[in-house]
Length: 305
Image 1 (cartoon, rainbow, N blue to C red):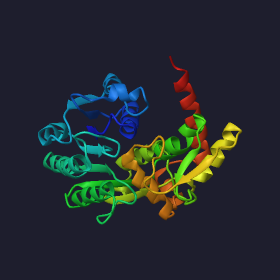
Image 2: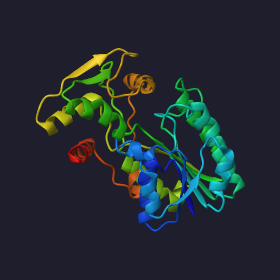
Image 3: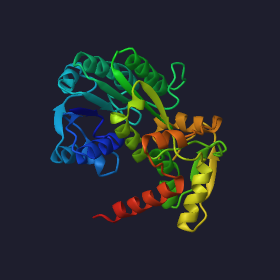
């Protein structure tokens, strides 16, 4: 049995669906008052009902409820967690989810005898990070390493699906300029969410993934301005780019994400992926292929009644 925590999110839902299609026994942690059905209509979640209909076994609980986690982990051989509080609100905070929640889940999994724990972190998670989200991810990584369980930490660069879609694609499709913080010329190994999902699935059976932190990036390092230029070529029109200083509003991004957006202009983050992708059998998605696919999916969604 594989327990997927965060299955009603976009990445967790993608992983759960692939597991179900592959015939794996899947259990999902579902909040009693999950907004997944409503959020799925906006492309921001995976509906719990669809996963249950596809064969997933639901266990109702929450990362903030340790007793529910003990029940969820009972009988599971593997735990995969993609849950995070990056774009959440209310009671779901960095402290309650990333720190306390992840620790409670790791403790519950260890107590239940889970054999392999797969944790989705972030490439730049570090104890001394000025960003609470990244510092909390690092704390969870340390807790997992000390747990005694076999583990795999998947540490992706920034998701194309989040950053390129929200910073570049959506404003451009609305006839608005692309807004970047600073120069917008720093290059990062943005990675497609489906490719991260492919690494998660590969880690389940690949011995080289055991007790390892896998940094996962895309096949090329690109900037926001590169993405705007490429998307303009796809749309066959120029897309204007405007620059704002750190702290200024960024259309399409929640305010909680503005500091992270600003941080992209202070460094480059290429990731050499050829060997890792080959070893795990993952075919990485180039930026242009992602933009074309995402555009087709967005246009299809916009045409639905």
